[in-house]
Image 1 (cartoon, one colour):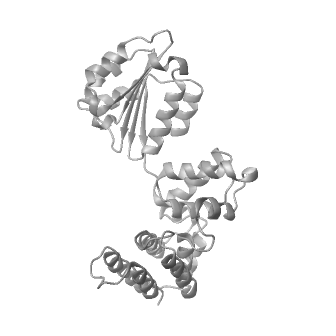
Image 2: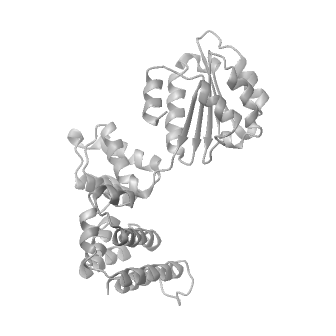
Image 3: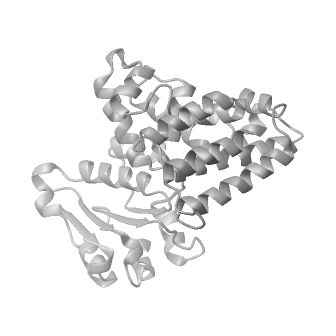
Length: 330
């Protein structure tokens, strides 16, 4: 079952008797479990019928005993196991899952790792309840996810703004969601402007990692050094190590596009290149040789080590940053 369908069902109070929420991305697990906490048991009955437990401090027999008990003065109870990945003997819950109590909603929050889909527990949950696999959002999917999430909360932004936020905030979805909620509360008419992003998120309109990537793709020597100089003089805005990661992504995507016979938007998206960025990457194929791009990747590796204190010959981070960019753009 999809994330959106699970959320929709919970909001309509159509509950499954058992939820197994597992996977690498904690954000989706948190959203579902928080909504269940808000919805399953009425506020004035939480003291009686809401039981939040933690995997490290729990045992399967105790969980089963709690799940088999009946709610007090209510229609249902919530038994939620947070950090269920730390629960020893979790597979022993299978016996309860096969015959769950209708008045109990059992929730297993199994973060950062998955329950073996071949296991008896997973198969049992799949038959009677919801087994949700929380997949990690990849870098190239983040811009589209931000735009979609913004639409859900009635916040209007374009592809460039979504990609700007993606590059600045990174793949911490909880952080991204909080930033969008903040913007939603502040902006007028729910239509986001670049000035809103600059003022309230702290991203400079001209000097940010997204503009740096564009300058590199354009092989614009003056602009790239201007942006780097801003970073050097405002170190809180961008550190050299995440900048190296952002540039490495640009060059690896360039190589994928270079070798691809299909350079259509659909094919490029699978390479991690958004439709918005595809024209920039396509144009850059005429501005770089494969030899230069491979050489630049080696430069990034060299300066990544220097930034971490290996072979830097006493140079400061700011000097290393500017030196690296000059070599990349030559």
